[in-house]
Image 1: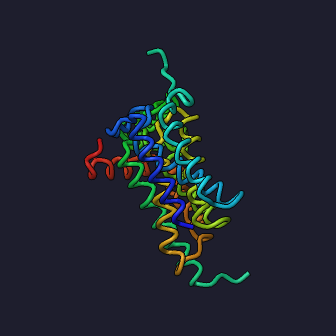
Image 2: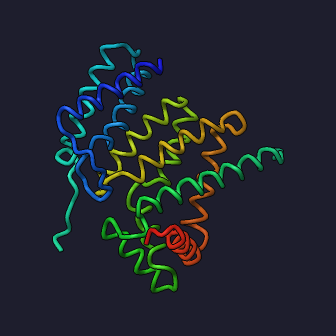
Length: 85
Length: 165
């Protein structure tokens, strides 16, 4: 079963590289990068799929494509708030 | 109900492991450096007025205002107790979403939850996950419940020692 986790992680990193997620990690920024939160979203979604259904190749590919897209637009989905000075 | 010494020892080890995990992860990701939200700033300044350390106060304020590695460790141990290693991964995802809802980039919480899951998995042969749940409650009590001024000084000292302030 661990094979599917690794497979979807690899797919998500490749897709993230193709859609040009930034490589640099900035811990103060709300923008996503190639590793954060892509890795955590992929593992978390795969775990949810594993618990609810069963893991297979199709789910691995779907999660592997969805999580870098989520990572790309994470600052739009969950924007940070600035307190006007 | 009888309390065995083995159980107490396991709880104590769980407390120490959780305390070290969340304090180190939170300090590394810069919780003592600056307040993430206004509430954390108020808590930090109040603690400084009472005679504590302002950076330790920011640390404690950030813990209150957003689910950082402390909440990550607690949630990871609960989820590990319920559904095993997969549960820890789900907890990491939920902590990330919770962090973002609380105006926090989310590095401290997610890394804390993942490191807690890995540590609990490695130690699960000796100490069952339930001791980590109790241990984390005790650990967070020593920071947020026992003596705030002293706790802020300890956290400020650790932050300075690690060179994060």
